Every structure is written in C-alpha cells, then in structure tokens.
Amino acid sequence: MRTIPEADIVQLLDAVKVRFPNGAGEAVDHWVIKQGLDSTNDPAIWVWVILKDALADRVSDVLVVNRIRDLIQDCLFEKLDVYFNFGLGVYVSFRSVSEQAEALAMHERPRRRAARAR
Image (cartoon, rainbow, N blue to C red; front, side):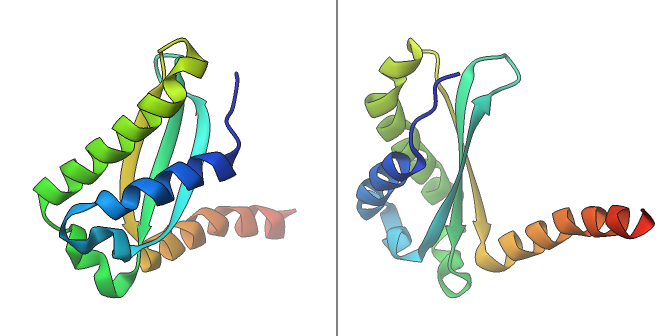
C-alpha cells in the first residue's frame, strides 16, 4: 500500500487547524497519524488530534468536533485521495495529552508483563 510521508500529512493538518472553530486550533498539542488498510481493505489514514489538557474543553461541543472532523477529512481527501484512486478513508479521533499518555501506558503494561514472564 502506498503511504504518504507523515511530515506531509502534519503540514496539511497544521495548515487547516487555523480554521477550527471556537479557538480549537490553539488547543492542538500534536497529531498522531497511522496509515494502513481499514476494515474494508481500503487505504486509510487515522488521525488522532491530541489536545492540550488545559484547552481540551474548546473541543467538548459535538458541533465543534464534527466541524473539525469535516475540515480534516475534506483537507486530506482534497490533497491525498487522488493518490489512492479515490478510495481513501480518513478517520479522526480526539484525545487530551493526559488521555494519550494513559493509553500509551496501558499499551506498554502487557509488554512489560510478557517480558518479565520470560
């Protein structure tokens, strides 16, 4: 499967975040990006919008979340879909910095336990 350099995707996302409603662009701490095939075996890009804990409430309204998701999807479809024969899926999720750290820590725990069992 073809992939797009992550730096190129980040550049597109950084450019579109200035259009986020409710000052939500300022709440973005960073992006987490994964590329691969989705459940229908189509090419996909998953974007996790990682929000600063202190500003995460700017993205608590469902209308704001939906607008941000639409902006990200529209941007990535417009710029990248042609490279995937117009079959690209774009999936957007939101987490705060602390939620992301907790998720990463939970992901690491089973590995540590498995390593100790050897």
